[in-house]
Length: 610
Image (cartoon, helix red, strand yellow):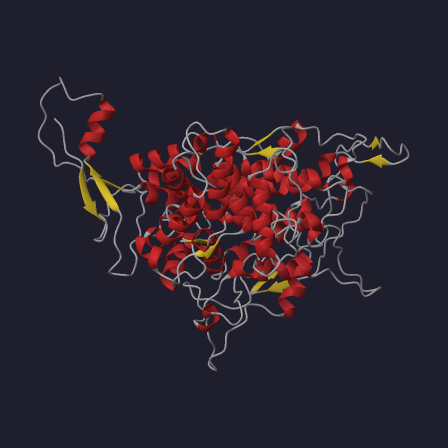
């Protein structure tokens, strides 16, 4: 028996007995156009699973099980739009796949893809963990090579997009690390973000806290307990940033991200100096773990002994016997610590104290909306509605199975929410966000098949405003990221309308021409970026003689067809100013391709992602 595939609408309520991993969310806007959904009769699924329906004894008729509803994009542009929010780039094959199987099945499949190669493993595979005359142990640049390789290689685009967003929330900057094997340290930090991207927030908090790079960056490593004889007190840096930036923020929040107000209509602070001072006691007594460390003489200076990489590739330890300078004296504070309504009794061991503190922070009501809103900002839109934040925060609070902090569920809630997918956002002036320069660069490389001639991905620090992008992955200028989540560009309509535009903090009179100049060089480089990384443009060369087809392809893959007709007409006129035929030389075709890509990537329609 064959059963038809019926399109239905998602503007009504979804039956409660749909599969547990399907969580469509309907926007509050009653005028919103719901995505097209196909009803697959569950009886057909069961029949297919059994291999057919012939034979067997007759059985009594039973009511058919409810249908499984799967939302699917109806156009290539809709498909590309969803993928470009979820991942670092989009391909023809991905567009075809998601149109075939639907949004959530496609996203689930991407979330299930295992990590192909860690950053630490890649550095080792290229020999960057060896003590040689190149002194890799004293240099940052292998860390830059590592992250560009991670972001520009094909695998795990969805996971890496989430990890990159996390790196802008839990900030460690390569430029702030000054010790041997700093490249390996930042690679291990990246690997922990990457591996925890779809895990649990509570584990991520602990991994970040004990990470050796974070320990150095925010002063947890070597943080000693109080000493009444000298007046020394624990360093408060990490305790403050843990609350302000990594968990609860400065002000108490409602679940929709709005601030709670006191009787005087003023925002209520989440913590005070006493909370910071007390929490700081928890983060004492940790240092790098040198278990099994073997020192190797430096090639250039045999008298200098270089530690092995192990100490930057494992969590910090409370055990003073494992430190670089072993001791029998613990440096963990034994004083009582009272913060945010939680008390850790005096003489509590360090491991228990850390667990208690992180549990208290993790379970604070602010975490869901505070974290959720910023992840929405990184992936979807700078100004999400309170209802959108509330829906995501509710998933953080409970994934539907009683689990708090399930990041897989949180990222799914962000990306599958109707506010993210609804076509209304394409024409809503307040919706969307500025694409970060590093994301534009990575998208270019992935979209047009960039490869490394040497295999080393020799792209360095691109932070310079004039000669680079004005932004480089894992190189934030401070713990406050490249930009503030509440940044408001002065004297703009954004300010007038009480909105925010975080990424606009990167936009100025130097960074704007700097980006265009850098991309001009990268797109058309003869020898490749850094003399090494070069795009192939294989598919584009095949249609370069057809300016309309070329432009359509690039607009779809880079901007999900969000380039306006007027902009496309202007770009097409520029392309057609020089005749290119099927018989034209490769160089002539390449010039047209370079121009098309650059003009699109410099256009306002591309720079703002909706």
